Amino acid sequence: MSEAGKPRSLRRWLKSTSRRTFFVYPLVVLAFEFALRGNMPEIAPWATPLLLWGYVQYRLVGNYRVRLGKGGPGVDTPPEHIVVQGPYKYVRNPMYLGHLIFMLGLALTFESWLAVALLAFHIVWFNRRVIDDEVRLEARFGAAYLDYKARVKRWIPGII
Image (cartoon, rainbow, N blue to C red; front, side, top):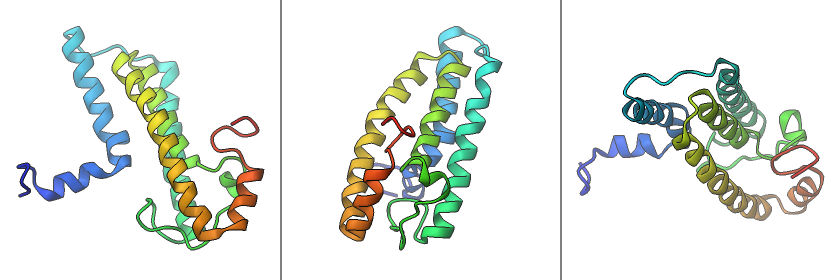
């Protein structure tokens, strides 16, 4: 047990951004909306594909990056190679974008202001994380990464 009273394994499990995004946040949003409304929230079926899209994008792109770039799926084990093909040919952060698409889907599917707040917070949080990642990648790969940054947008192809 840690000094905070939580088992270390639970704290480590919750430290994972993907576990929070794809498991914890949906449960928290559902519980919040249930408590707020007194029953299960209505689902906007037209928005549910965003949940699937975001999750599938995160998983497939993550596997692709690990296979081509080596390293780990997270920031703790950096890639050995820059991945500039596939989805990385269009945006530099398709895995993080998958998180944000999922969170947009969560907000729209359950018409939840809590999920909107989580999305807004994470847009800022992921952008700051990307800036930190880029510093590390520039230091690791130098001119090759700078060239990649000049060619490929951070979030939305051809826009930003």
